[in-house]
Picture 1: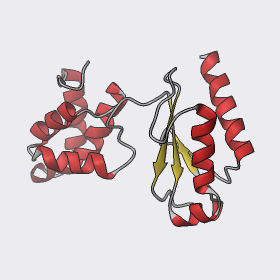
Picture 2: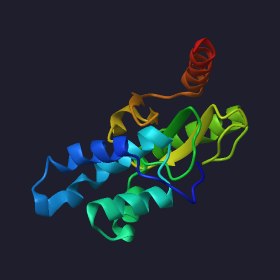
Picture 3: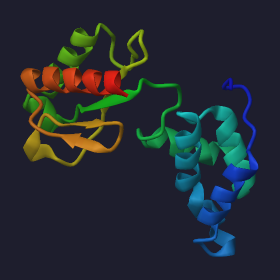
Length: 169
């Protein structure tokens, strides 16, 4: 499916309805984050066309949905690799080699920040604060798994482990 078109299926609409039902009828816009998460789970990312469909479904301006998508880095606005690696770049992590961790990952994988490897396996992104400053440098794998104290050695181990896991599956 291209980013220029998006069709809200009955199954997706049913999932949206379950989320909307959690809120008072006049506050169905409160389900916007859940609807974005549903689309991302189904499509792998949130396209502008899917944002428009969510806005229409929730009866809100498309720009309001777009603002949510762009504010939170957990929503992918384009296709990403099988493993999305978000490295914290805020000051506490920077002071404890966060930028070095980000640079090392990009160098190891042969991509620029924000890029995806040619095999579609890894995307590396700079992230805002992940709330684990004492464990710096920190990162998230696929917006779910927090990794702390990410030295270059630990980063190398992580990449090797993820590659091996993907090869098995």
